[in-house]
Image (tube, rainbow over all chains, first blue to last red; front, side):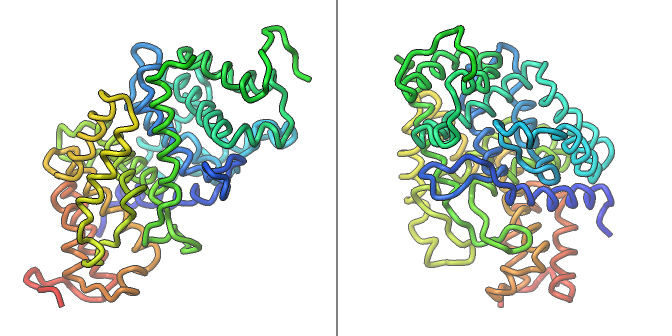
Length: 200
Length: 200
């Protein structure tokens, strides 16, 4: 008989396969189809490994990688909510916490608790690792939108102030990347950003 | 102007998006479609984080994670080759080395060299990290095949000896998982495995 601990780990591993079926609002490069949250999480891991030099000093890359790999699994139950959809975001927190309880509850208790805590750490955005992970999460959407000529922002007529407000975790968690973000958004929008701009 | 170093890093990040379009022979759970190599790499990262306790003592998880995240990017140029397709595997090594040169060559030289070395380390399968990463790569295909009732093996009429030979990196890189592998293959095939079985 297989060790019950391994069986629980395998149960989780098979269950999270479903993240490959959760679609995001952003397209893969070339816009042939929408991206799913599993691919997105992979891409974030690659970005963390490559852009570690822009993280706040002392950030633990291994912890950040694990955090990024599991940060979206709650979407298996709770779905992906479009950042700019206010109605859809109502109740999101509660849905995600219920999802975390069910999914991490599949694991052996010690591991379930460790991953659940790591996921909460990402959500609370207070440690260096969480801030850097959140910065990359936004930076990925940013890089994709830029590769597709600003597609999602234009399609949904998002204002410059709103885009930069959404991208603010980059300024906070990976400040060295921020000037590039502002400059690029300005180029796409064809004008300079005024610090005191309000949302239109 | 954006720092040329960051521009090269971004060039690589955008280029590897193409891994989301490289299809493998294995299906996602439920068999609704084939899996792509980006999702596969994500899943391997999650598995590494969860199954680290089965790695040889002293295995560095952070290094293993980075290795797993980038181990398949060469497929962007070289394609995914079905493990049991002997003709398709001719020239695979050369194709993959050319791909590594082009892709890692997009990065700033120090990073390109670091990742290229890490990819070669995976291929050469000599360090604990590489052995554990290779074990997980096989174990993922194994878990998927089992979830889908042994689909790929049955569809291609792969013999028990050949399956276990293919899975041998698990015995080598994560020996604690091996008894589970043999037992499960026996259950699917409906008979016990004889150590001296030859390929039929």
